[in-house]
Length: 255
Image (cartoon, rainbow, N blue to C red; front, side, top):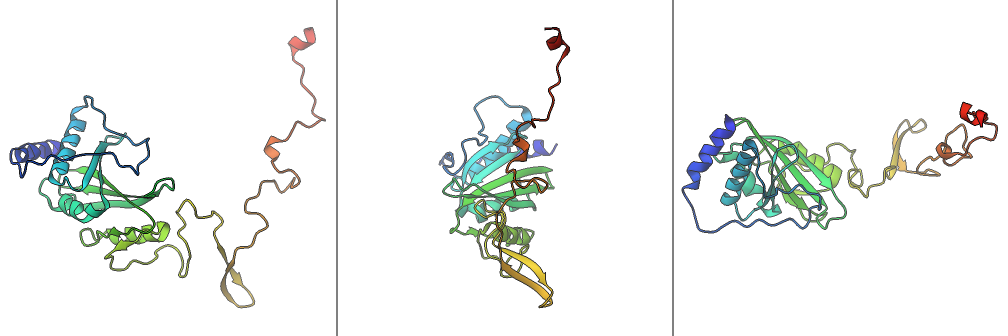
């Protein structure tokens, strides 16, 4: 029922054109080749309505919408330029036919092979139309992203977590500081180039009667042996023991 309401609203608005400019869609150079792309084929009615709504948003914001696509689980995704974060989310929240007033989740993905290695993913929910939408943008280690805390207050801690774990800086954030790691922590743990063992270790010093932070010292980063047989580097691939007796089958005995 909610999708029908959106479709009717789009059909009404499509009769009024604000200009003759046609939006252009192009593939993001920063995305992986395995990205789900909407092919030219027939879809079911629900998918067609999602695509219709995506085209409606793209026609309203042709400067910022770079691509629309349907995920494998039949969810609408909008790929936007980094400079279009504020206008796109202001439109999705306040436009009458959108009303995505709930920010369900905000996360990041690190793909070091890309020039813009970080992908910022926003998940929105419209309680009015019972519809979800996913918005994606991109950045690198040095380029900041506009904070959407002025539009969605729930983005405050989400953006702090992304800054803490990935090092993506959000401009105009009211209180951008670490939220999960300790004070004075160096580095961003969710980056793919961050070592699994970390840089420092935390322990309680009985002499100083307090918790101390020390540089990490270990003879080897990963243990490749079992404590029962430390002389074997890869015990799972050991050769058969010479004392093992081969079980002779009945066919071999007859031969």
